[in-house]
Each structure stands twice: as C-alpha cells, then as structure tokens.
Image (cartoon, rainbow, N blue to C red; front, side):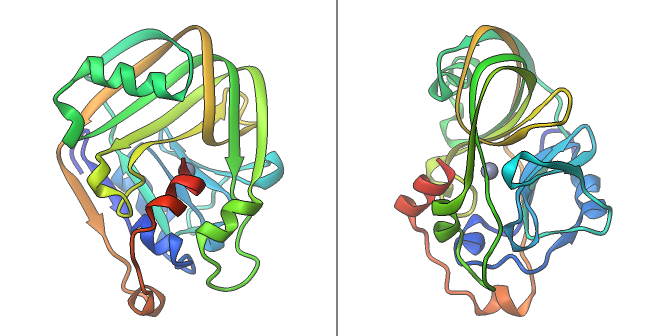
Length: 235
Ligand SMILES: [Zn+2]
C-alpha cells in the first residue's frame, strides 16, 4: 500500500452480523499500514495501530500489545503521512469535522485520515466486551460495552472519516480510537474535548483497498446496512 491509501479488511456490516471468528494476522496488518483501527476475534476489545505497534484495548481498561499471530476480523490501516498539521482546540467530537472541512472542503466524498496528539481535557471512550456467544452481532454488544470517562489525559487519537454513502462498508463519518502516552488507557472515542491546543495531522485519501474474508461465516452472513444500529454502536 502506498502512502495515505487505506487498506481495509472485511466490512463493518460483517461485524454487525456477528462475523468475527477469524481474519488476517497482526503481522499481515502491519504490512498494510503503520496507523489504524479495528477489533479482534470475537470482538474482544478495540484495536489501535500506532507507529507499527498493534494494541488491544480491552474492556475494563486493560491494554496489551497484540501477538504477531493474533487474528483480526476487521481493521482499517494506512501508511499515514500528514499533508498538513494544524494546532487546534477542540470543543467536542464535531470540531474534528470542522477542522477536516477547513483543510479540504471538497473532500466530502473522499476519505480522510488523521492523527491528533496532545492533552485532552475530557475523553469518553468505550471498549467492546467481546461476544458472549458465537455469532453475537455488534449491535447487541453495543448495549454492554465498557465506557469510561477520562479527564486531563495526554495521548494520541487515530481516526478516519468516511463519506456517508459508505456506511456499512466503513463507519460513515468519524471513527477514532485513543491511547494515552503511557499505554495504560484507551478505546473507541465517543466524546472528546481539548481546551489546550493539540496537534492534528491530516491527509486526504482517494485510494481504498478492501479485502473480503473467504470464511464460511462471511459467506453465510446475511448483511444489510443498519444505519440506526451503526450510529448507536459506532457513533
Ligand atoms: Zn471503533
């Protein structure tokens, strides 16, 4: 994959249908990019790829560095190189959209990737707890996710913005994962606020490569786009 192209394995719709029993390995993913996000087999926690290291952000706030053979049923990754870095204060999650629009207001139908570094006044993160039974859909797991709120934490957010029409392939709109500088806390970002200036590196992406699973599970899944369900679990 070239700089600032997106590689994605599987579809968010497959997770929504509970397809998460297998996937590519950690060592395969880090060949596709140095920054990204996703989840693990049986949706056991959030995945964050940062500078070539894959972290598993598990429920109840535990973090581990993933093993090379760990399997990933869904992930998006990029060889990130920022085209512009801006220093900004962020009132809330929507402020990210405003910054991206200022960078390129013609990118509403393109993908964007970004990385935000600095001190966050407030962060609300969730970590998915993992399937309680085989094939349990993500929409159901969303009701039992672990949610934590952090104040005054320093760290990095890795994110993608996908055009609305790609809902179900990707998460439409913003999708971002956070990890702190000490690699102790993190998760899928639900809310954020940065009263001090943080550094935000931004790139526009117009090349996307999607690899689909060939597993029996994926082939048997009945997939459709559940916009309401997706917004409730990935919003
Ligand atoms: Zn996520």
